[in-house]
Image 1: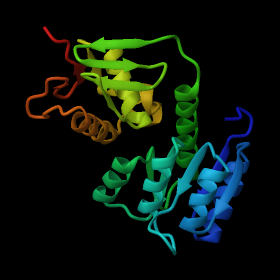
Image 2 (image 1 turned 120 degrees about the horizontal axis):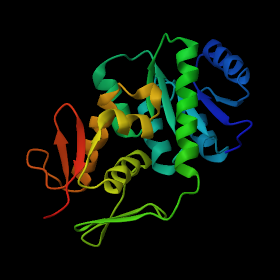
Image 3 (image 1 turned 60 degrees about the horizontal axis):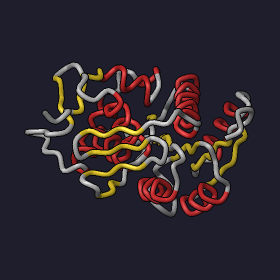
Length: 233
């Protein structure tokens, strides 16, 4: 990603919304590309390699959630959903499908720009070089260099957010990591109160690691505090 001009893709069928977002984002030094349909959005999300996608759900040809799933299956680009759909079920479904964030229309432009900055910072932190880090906790192995996770020698496929959470837990295995610390370090300060984001990722991790949420053997919940990766013995 260019540190000077991050490229942002806007996928929205309303011209006035795209124009408003284009002007606001360009004023912050971003390069902006646009798509008015889900099909065009998919093509541009893969072909133009944006650093961030702003995605509306009410598209004329393909439901936005299908576009989200398709983008997340082919790319690690962060996607912020921007939609009039305000139900908790819709938000959870999109976050569960891989969205980095969810903003409800109508929105304050300063809040949206803050969320864009947070997502771009996290993208840089995830993509940037880091010291060699490999963690082994019982049968679980987390290699932060290769982004590879195995359990009992079997590879486990994780999304970037899931991997980031598991890596932080593995780095401090046996210790409680607070919800605020996890949210701040992985999603950014603007999300330190969005505990539902973390619950969704922890739930997906437990499912992929075959960890019973009622009697977890790997990821333990400290009620009202945070989470701990259990060290055997």
